[in-house]
Image 1: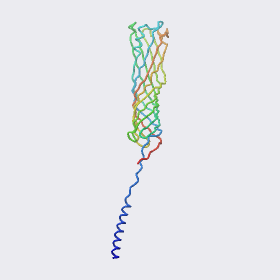
Image 2 (image 1 turned 45 degrees about the horizontal axis):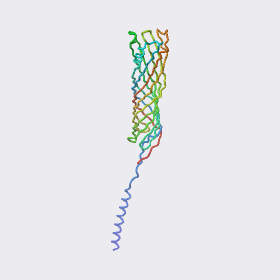
Image 3 (image 1 turned 90 degrees about the vertical axis):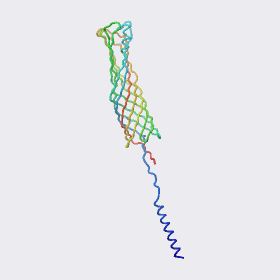
Image 4 (image 1 turned 90 degrees about the horizontal axis):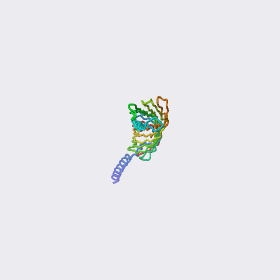
Length: 277
């Protein structure tokens, strides 16, 4: 009987030992933490693209009883002086900004300065209604070499590393305009120039993709409106400069509007990385 009990006890203990070994071999690993990209931080970058713009320069004058023009000449000059021109060029420059990520939203402030390259000219001629076949010519040139913007950005994350955003703010550029009037009646001439640092506005949309190590690529569209600059002159002369007609006041103006499409690369410095499972 003792031998039988010892045999049964050996079998039971052996089975328990095997089961304990099996239980010890099975366990669940703790979840591995992965780093999620966070957009918060200061960044710098560069951009390159193109601009397609237009301007509507104007030249007009007024009738004066002691002036140079006949009554019918003034409307004709003002009609020809309402001109339009187009411009297109490569644009590019430097960018800097800061982003704040709040859950799936990204808020930011961005500034840039770029070569703008806006430049265009227009010329129109007509006969004097009173004095054909003599006539006159009005010419305009408008340009802006550089453009700076200061904009807010607001966007949402389509994916942790893919941002869609809208942007808008101030646009700043030095607008230049050159204007001239000449005629064939008496070699009359008048001219004026505009040099005006304009504060306008800009708005647009864009997308940005972060691909690691703080680097990101973006594509962006901006519409820019710099408003209108105006200058007056009283330097009309007739008869090859022999006689002055200051009572025939001229008014010249220029505006610039542009569409900008560009791509860029940014580098973000530091910023938190959020752990996720």
